[in-house]
Image (cartoon, rainbow, N blue to C red; front, side, top):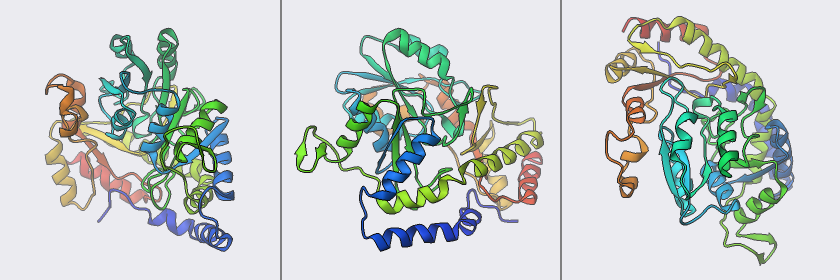
Amino acid sequence: MKIPFVSFLPMEKELNNDIRDAFERVFARSWYIEGKEDEAFEQAFAEYCDSKYCVGCGNGLDALMLALKALGVGAGDEVIVPSNTYIATALAVTYVGATPVFVEPDINTFLIDPVLIEAAVTDKTKAIMPVHLYGQACDMDAIMSIAGKHDLYVVEDCAQAHGATYKGRRVGSFGDAAGFSFYPGKNLGALGDAGAAVTNNREIADKIHALGNYGSDYKYHHIYKGNNSRLDEMQAAFLLAKLSHLDRMNEERRRIAKLYSEGISNPKVITPVVKGECVPVWHIYGIRCAERDALEKHLNEKGIGTNKHYPIPMHLQECYRDLNIPQGALPIAEEISATELSIPMYYGMKDEEIRYVISAINEF
């Protein structure tokens, strides 16, 4: 049996008519930037995220970077980020001229450990950027408490967590702002690069919008040294067509994850832990195994696609050599990088495929 790591085919087949209708609607209107589709999606996605405002932009990295810029984070500032995440989180901090400060995650959830955040706060710290990694929600009560105590901004990285909740509230609604990616592989994915920032603060929303539109508040009037990062009408229309199906598709991911967690019984394999106050959306189902590479080879030989998130931790990447963080300094991130293996997780997986993956893991 051949099972890819991810497949869009079941979803695309189901939503084919909606996507084609969206394309025809935009094409017939001949308006491709900041039009009715963008406005409609921004309103709908803000409501979905329990937030007042949404500003579409070019991608998830830009969403985070523009949010930081709008909050005035810049040169000389430090931003606390998890040591275990995709590099876009740290790059957003770097692009505004600030310095990322890596804080270790909980080894069981892979999420930033709030107990360790406060020790990393200095007089240069300006913000905390928690990442709702793999579709699980961080402990936002603890993070917001620390931020309030030290007068810090909170920018949530929700790139992998569309629809996840913490104590009944959607991620993205807790901090001063939040960034989402709509890369095609996300739970809510465009048909190309796209992103958005959400916030409950009108002033921040307006500034993010201006910063992403060449720093302009109205045509040919530029109040900031901005960027060109806007959500185009076609991608907005595609996202709007998919949004009404997101909760249903996330529920199917939860069903698959439940089958994995209940079915995987190999003592060599550690399945992910979910805290009770979090309802995840399982963008990624990542297991850990000390013999990760051998397990990956075993699964691949059986036709099962896998991925490793992320095999080189950020502090050991060539681009962050200037931070002078030696190997061994962040052992939990390094442990996760050496042992994590992501197994197939996508809407439309058949039960026989799920059982096949479980059986292959258990026989390793």
